[in-house]
Image 1 (cartoon, helix red, strand yellow):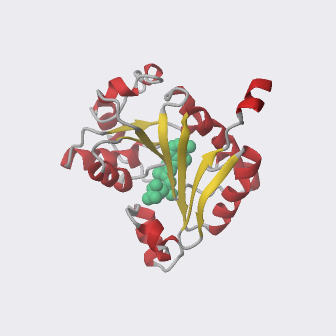
Image 2 (cartoon, helix red, strand yellow; image 1 turned 60 degrees about the vertical axis):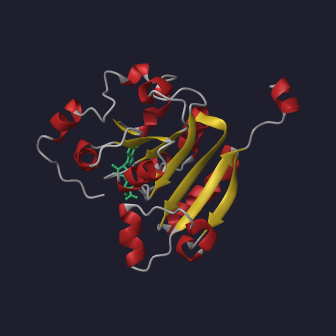
Image 3 (cartoon, protein in one colour; image 1 turned 135 degrees about the vertical axis):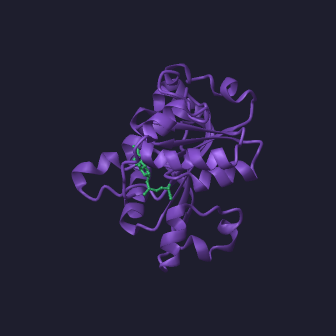
Length: 225
Ligand code: SAM
C-alpha cells in the first residue's frame, strides 16, 4: 500500500471512540467480550488497510464482533472515516503492529482471522515479516480458539505458494485451497471483496485463497507432552 503521511491522522485516531487506544490495549486480553458488551464470536482482520472488507463484513454479520488491525495511522484514518459515515456497534479498530498480537488477545479468544492481500516482503531475509509466515502462524495459534479458522486471500502467487509451504512445518491443515477464487462458485458465496481484490481482479489477476485450521494434538499426545 502506498503510504502518504496524512497530517493530523494520529490525532484523529487518538481521539476516535472506534479505536481501542494504546493505553487500553494491555487490558484487552480476555476482555473483548466486555469491550463489545456481548458473547458474540470475534473475527479479526490483520492488515485491514482502509477497512472496506471488515466494514462490509460487520454490516452483513451483526452477530459477529469484528476487530480491524492496521499498522499505519494514515491508512487506519480511512477506516475510521468510514465508521463516522456509517457507525457499527460490532466493529473496533486497533492501530498496532501485528507482531504484538498476543498482547491484545488472550489464548483462544479469537474465532477467525482474515489476512487479505498481505504485504509480500519479497526479500528472503524479510520472510518472517510476512503475515502468513510460520512465525505469525505461531502467534495466531495462541489467540485462535480450538476450532478457529484462518482465511488468506492474495493475487501474489509467490506469496501464496510461500504461505502454503509454511502450513505443514507449522502444524496447520488446509481445508480449502483455490488458485482462482473468482471462478469457484461455492467459495464465492458470501465473498466480500477487499480494496486490493477489486483492483487486482479487475486487472485480470486470479485471486488465490486458503482456509486453514490448526492441527491439534490427539489426547494421547497431549497427555505425553
Ligand atoms: N487488506 C487490505 C486489502 O486487501 O485491500 C489492504 C492490503 S495492503 C497491501 C496491506 C496492509 O497491511 C497495509 O495497510 C499495511 O499497513 C498493513 N500491514 C502490513 N503489515 C502489518 C502488520 N505487521 N501489522 C499491522 N498491519 C500491517
